[in-house]
Image 1 (cartoon, rainbow, N blue to C red):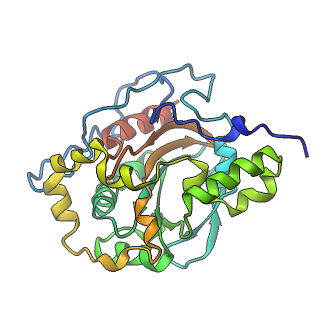
Image 2: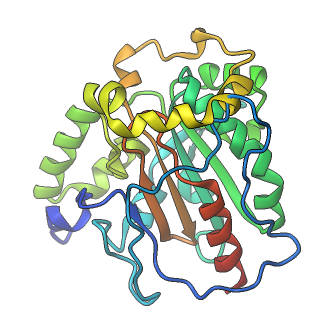
Image 3: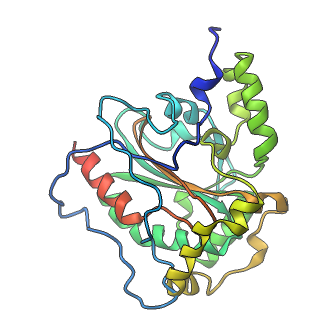
Length: 284
């Protein structure tokens, strides 16, 4: 097997957001504008202050901001589990890897109240994604039975919910780097979790003390509504999993169109931005 350089595949966290420049187009009837929260309740809406600048680039290039051109191909062979049946499935089997579009939302874990709020917002927008031909894939840290707790109590559609249960960020990321240096990527890739491959943040500081987490207080009404039936029993048994942060990614085929890593707990990507991108990209 040909050697693969370590720097070619490892995520380099120079920025938390990446989006290629797409030509704007007028909104079609099935692509509604932003999903602003007008409930007036604990408004954990998806709107937020944009701390991270959007990096634009030509559509001919698929790498800027630390992601390799092949990140979609690498993620394609990562296995997760369906929430409905607990069966193993690879990312490449979730949408057409040539022309299909998908929004991949990486939740922190199924017992995170902020993730219930994000899941609720995604559920409310699912019809828009479906109308635009975009597959919604929501992944959380935890076992399928933990995922089903969120799905049943929120509720959330089981056909869009997946589990990535055994996240051990520090050890697996270290091992990944070693394996890359040894050029054993292909034999190791099936052992990876999605969070490892996408290089999402992990740690005590990110989870509890990052300033970006304060954004959650601007969406208090939305959060309050989402956690009405919340239960802590959805939290993973491995308590170290609660230190995992999430992110939002958009793919067309296996090409990455948009990537944003959550800086802290509750620091979610603006869903209006995701919807606009999906509408534009699906029309191309």
